[in-house]
Length: 301
Image (cartoon, rainbow, N blue to C red; front, side, top):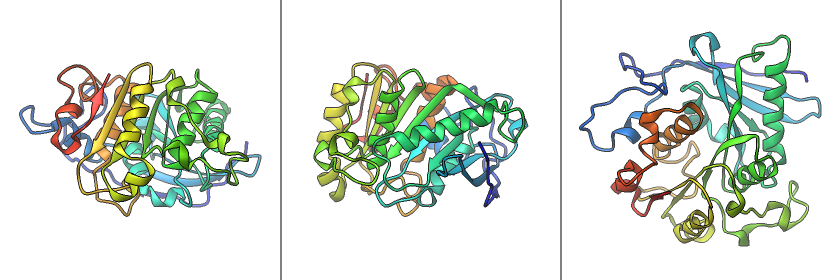
């Protein structure tokens, strides 16, 4: 594989003076409201850098990662991202940068049709190969045993499909506005509608499905649709329905700041880093997500 670094930018992390708990999250007052969500909505402790790369097949990816791996003290878990229809990674810089600031290495396909999951999986392939290379910035720096996959809209379908195609690879899945199957249609990534269809009921990995009550999502990925997907999942799952003023574009930079950041960060820290504080948002009768009034209609199992 060849890496062609085209752009790079480093952003300093916030949270000066915050203590770091087992998963790498800033601590928060135990008696504060919704403390897990609010704490993990803050930027993590690591500065980040962004680059674009091209693999041997000519496929382009954006990589958002910790700027200094030696500062982590642990191998960086991999997250592979799928864009929504007609979108690119540049529309999700806030979200991807947030996760990198907690020590994750995020790879995002440059393609705007990712429903099949093929390009998402190719991004994972790229990072796994770079980690195994004898030299390079990523060599030996990544945790290839704990990999997550996530995406938005069509990319959410792609994330599920990637996990179904390679169930032994992905340890956690997260979706933003996973569309109703009626929206599965042929495109440049999917030669048939079936290629972009997805089946959460066949997942082996835990999944966090996030939806909204907005007008666009009412047609594309309604709370009823997300709930039906959640009900079909055979194993550990979480359902998050945002009651805040947001809609289908929630994970993009255009949306309301921070509505998606806290629990997204907590989910991957819980599933890929074993962060017990983050886990408390998604497990048991006292799961914070279920009792958070900003996420009414949510559930965990």
